[in-house]
Image 1 (cartoon, rainbow, N blue to C red):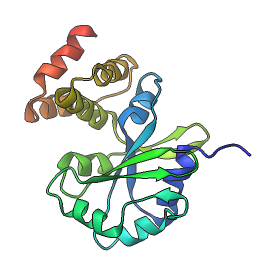
Image 2 (cartoon, helix red, strand yellow; image 1 turned 180 degrees about the vertical axis):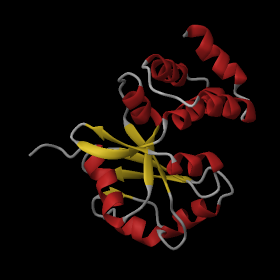
Image 3 (cartoon, rainbow, N blue to C red; image 1 turned 120 degrees about the vertical axis):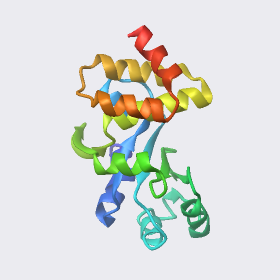
Image 4 (spheres, rainbow, N blue to C red; image 1 turned 90 degrees about the vertical axis):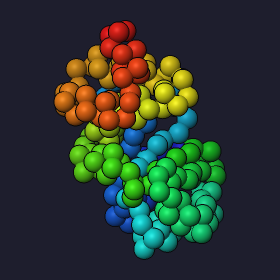
Length: 186
C-alpha cells in the first residue's frame, strides 16, 4: 500500500468537514513556478472559536499530533500571526496551519483562492499575488534566498498576475527592497 500524500492527510479532512482553506508557501510557489523540495505544507484556514473543535476532530489524535483545543483557542485570539502545526505520526509529514481571522491579506487570499489540480487531485491554492507578497515578507524577516528564488520562478513562469495589486501591497508592507532584489535578478 502506498504512503498517503499530504493532500490526503491534511486537505481531505478539511474538505470533509467543510473548513475553508488555501495551500500557500513553497507548495503553492512550486505550483506557480518551478519545483523544489519541501518538507511540509503551509495552510491558511478560516477558523473561529465555534469551528475549532470540529477542525481538531477531523484529525484523529491517534494519527496526528495536534495541539489541545485550549492552544488553538489561544492562537485564534491572537491579534496577528495565530498558527499551530499538525504532524502525521506515521509519516512525520507536517502542516503549518495559519489562522485567517485578523489578517487582511489572509482574508483576501481566501476570497481569491484558485481551485487547481496538483497531482491527481484538485486543491485550493492561494492566489499567486498572495504567495509572492508573503514570500517577500518571509525573506525580509529571515533573509533566506529560497523565498526570492521562489518569487523569481513564479514571475518567470508566465503566471498571470495583478501587477497593480502587487505594487500596492509591496508599498503598503514596505517590501520595496525585497521586490527590487527580485526585479533586478529577473
